[in-house]
Length: 182
Image (cartoon, rainbow, N blue to C red; front, side):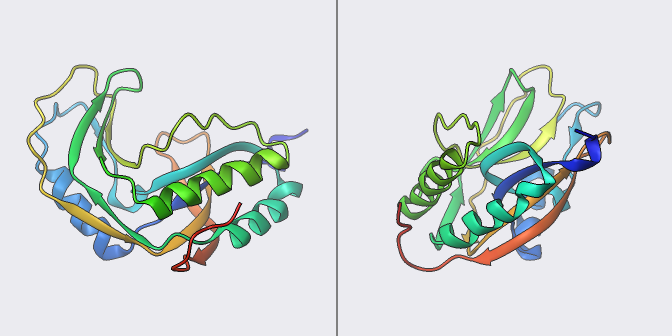
């Protein structure tokens, strides 16, 4: 199979411009080594289900899953900075997971698993990556609260072969204010 016939895809909460600007203000308050790569605000997102490498012919099936799963309107409160040593990142994390976002996560994983997508759904950890290449644990301040109204689910494409990931929206759905069904 040629590389052109494969897409790297994931489902995500994609923030509004105002939400990205608020998160950028939060990220700017971090005192990080200048060699660290800060993530550009236009790349901020919360991954809900990482699908991975998918043949382009299967994208329609993923779009159908997204459309059928788009429920879970909620507010996600980012209330902690965390340093994750293995991937060498600093993230803004949400300590409390809204029940509707948890249901959306479970529904997506169940439906993706049913079509043979090999997922590793250990648990949902809502976060926004703010910096990469953070070799040593930085001193992290108590973050100011930053909230996102989670109102849209997106199927995203991640471009490969670039120093900086480029994300594009493949499809998007407004989240309904009702629980997702399995």
